Length: 293
Image (cartoon, rainbow, N blue to C red):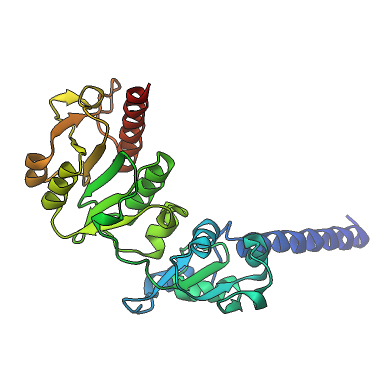
């Protein structure tokens, strides 16, 4: 190969390398791939989240933040965003907004949220949503109740399904349940803004109150005496799901109106709690729709 050929090849390689870097940088700004940093593993291991005040929450991700900005019950402190992400939010002139907007780099957000957060170039500092009580129930014949489901990813996914199937609220315990956080909100992908998230002190007492309000409370249990489809009665349903592994607590099992199982004909007889919730919500909606015909 001649020197001229080598120089031409080197030039082409350099040009393509530049293009590849530009594409990667654009993807990182959109949050499609993580932002690299020197000695990433060491930094990830040593990263400590900032100490948030009880009235301070960091939300992130385009769907999550846009839903929060559209929620009139949200009190916004500050929006930190890349130029690219701001354009994708499509919320107008930053100077005309009622909250401050700070334009930052993806790395600036990484420093706050940590190197593993898929923030898509946007972070919202906000106050938590108002505390909800059972009185906040929407006019819906379908509720979802969680008995100490602790994983915020699971609760967020369940919340998303609850909104998709038109549930009126998601009821959980104050202890052993996730509080409002960026991880919960990101997993819910906007659903946190669309459904009351009600945390109660005593779940058995709350179930009894729901029963007085006319809800049939059905606890999902793999050893339930009947299939869920055959357990429905009435026109208002509150589905109760327990934590993975432990399932429903004994007091909860004693308080619900009925225990039922999801019949699964395949080799696997148990599901992740978020998948079980989605299936149970669908079956409940089918029953409620049938009752209206």
